[in-house]
Length: 167
Length: 200
Image (tube, rainbow over all chains, first blue to last red; front, side):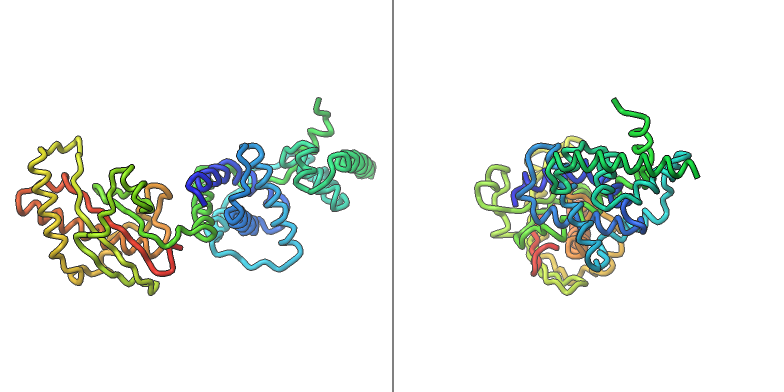
């Protein structure tokens, strides 16, 4: 591993780690677990540093793909708690999240009730700010598949919210 | 154009930990710790030069790198050598040398600098490391001391404890030079450290 590799991945982490942390926080019931998965993502990325893209935006995508895989593995298998994330876990435990908007809960509930594949797509686009093509890449989908899936997801969400407001 | 429905979806994101300076610091620590786990520096000698309480550190490679930076491989013939067993049980071989430095805040003429470096070399050659109470030296060192100008804080127990001994050694060297009327600010102590099992 060259000094240039080390410097590049450190810079990529500095730039992207707050967004990666938010990505995990939004997907895990236990917010502090987000620290563990962020630590695991970093360790994985370090071990594959020779594959780090040169382009800064591509580096961000690369790290999110690793994060998505890490989350997927986490959901499938029991993960041991990483001691290295203890400090960050402690910080998250005492930090207060920013306040929420009024009707955000209802929309979020509808998002969370979507079918798994649709849900993750909507979350990446609206919660993480990725384009449909970028979200497709993170999920390993063909862009056209992602577009149609996203359109279907939005129709489902509209219907769910109309139904909820009429009750 | 973003529709109001898109805006509603954007706003539905669950709240996350605010991005504060404290969070930034914790993330920086995590980045360093992940690196220490995933990509430890191989077990080669690392160079640490102590100048006024701040250290620079790097990996000493082949002659080309050393020559290019003006750092000839002094560690092949160090002024002093010590084997330090850390509290983790690691055996660290530490080599020391005295080098002349130019500190603009404390200008020293070349003759005085040469005399100070020579005296420091003698001091190091004759130094008895058993006179350093390592536990006490470690106790005096701040908990999160910066022993690595590149990566920041001392990251390993080995790094921290060998640094504590180096700080004590330089302190005694400074007193020795002052006793002999020589300028301590004209001398730096270089240390090359290698611990078994590499740097974790």
